[in-house]
Image (cartoon, rainbow, N blue to C red):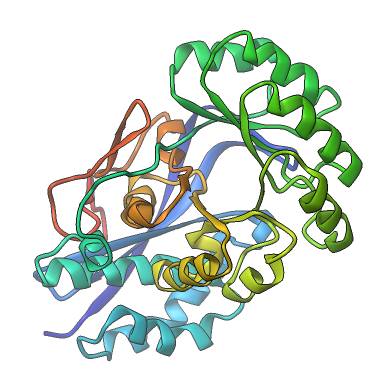
Length: 343
């Protein structure tokens, strides 16, 4: 039976304004791709994100461009389909991600398997997901922690009073902190902060410098007393090689690298280089988060809280119990849309 590709845009209202060092979001727009043979459907997601030039218009154009390729394809392995589609979407890996996730979901459902069963034998020793505390007044950041007790928090920084924020938040909870500066610091600041943060039960620092500050990152990697994890510096597969020697680990985002197929190769390459492996998310619905959670057995750290930040979700699938991943019992990524509209 021939495949059919459809897609639908959704507005995802957030429970609180989400602010990082670059911008603030109140409503997250996202696209959900469906690949179906009329009997079984698979789903994938990619968010609209101006920083990465991901817009409604661009996603629409990109997905529409490769729609005939998908619909004329035979039942092939997802990694083979990725190789066919990727050359047409070199400028839009967000669209490639949504398509790759949807096809992996379809493929694994067609084979009556969970997606993670292709690379993991059991759901054991899974990393705890962090819960993100976005930039806000210190009082509001403290209040968010009180409202959402969690074992690991990712604290977004990049303000004039970052040290004070962490010191005061530490008085609010004993949970582990992970710090994400989103490229806002200098090398010297990062090294100095690392000494203070280590005493405040901070586990690691994510992307403290601008992505192209290679000299600064080399200095930080050598002198920081906390592990440094690449995010903006590690977007696609080739970046893993560039991060070797500049970071202690990498944060893989499915939307940035083009989906699960590419992420699996990045994990293997990162392991070969002795890097710690993390995977993170955008502010996605449970569709994208359920896809991300499938690679959790391969990770050291995971930040899969995107759907937890929403006021209203569009699907059910993976869930989280005080940081612990709870998988759906369904095949594929295990997701079910609350309403399929025109998908």
